[in-house]
Amino acid sequence: MAHDQVVDGHIVHIVQQQEVREQSHLARELQKRGFELPQATLSRRLKKLNVVKVGGAYKVLAQPTAVLPQVLSIKKSDFGFLVLHTHPGNANSLAYYFDQKYVAYHENENADSHLLGTIAGDDTVLMLLKNAESADKVLALLRADFPYLQGDVT
Image (tube, rainbow, N blue to C red; front, side, top):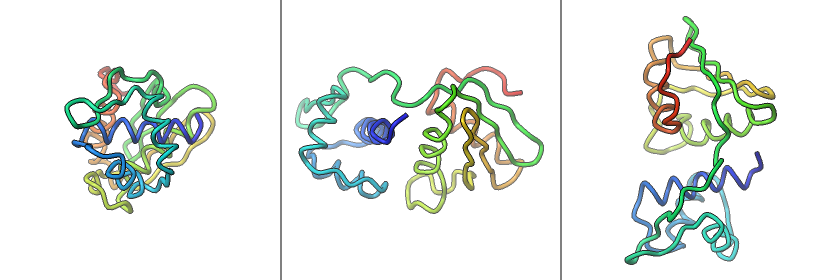
């Protein structure tokens, strides 16, 4: 997955979680997450994502498909690790997303997410947790981002 799709995921998330009335506000929020987008580029991305101004605030008209790669399975260890499997070539994008959204070195609303960092292979993401007890908290965050992950974790 390309960098653009990660940015798209952040744009959709911001618009869904906050009242965004101006593109400049959205640009500032993206900048806080490490993304610098010129206004013209941001405008094109909003159009591509079906994000439009409704009643003075930006809304997602139709959720874009495949903003983030699919998580195929999750395995939990007894030592403070989660192992996520995805399709080949997608692990790096997932790891980047989790690092940007949940790792505590970013000053965001999820700074105490219990996730220390990630390591990505081709189709596998290793999530390093604060401790073994953090697994359930991180799993709840994952299920919020990926609602289809309601099954058992092995």
